[in-house]
Image (cartoon, rainbow, N blue to C red; front, top):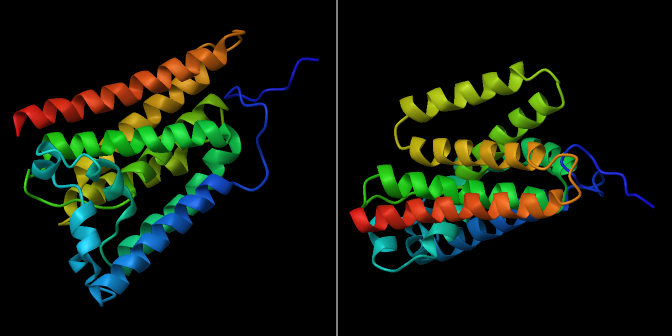
Length: 229
């Protein structure tokens, strides 16, 4: 019997968005660890764990490649954490419900890499960047593409994205590079998942190739940045 599939090609969606919840738990747990090891709630960035995991382009170029991923689970102070986790909870549950778990992981992961790539290319090589906002911006881009594909009003999402972009450029100490990199890659991967291979019996394979290509592109940009530092 043929299986029902939604607009993203997922055969099983709906229910509790467990990946989103797992990401929130992971981010909160890492924040608690930095608070405990730093001995300070607002000064958690003084933790040795934070120092070893934040995205510092020069250190990535010297071989500390894990920072590309670990930086996406570190936050500077409780307000930074709460803002990102609230956005992840609100936007993530909508995106995961439609895309399904595997595709949600793909969008989130590639958005994280895209944000890191932009930081590597356009940020101070000696500066430290941290936070899940690159991946969260990727989910914003994903939600916009989803609404357009479903022909639903996207005005509110456009407004939220525009407001956050303005804040990214006007408020000091915010990484506009990570935000825009995540936004672009998140929207691009979601568009690939929704449009490429639609109606084809090989749609899943096409989606895998598209997601892999996007991840490789992000890693290639990171590699290019490493050669320039």
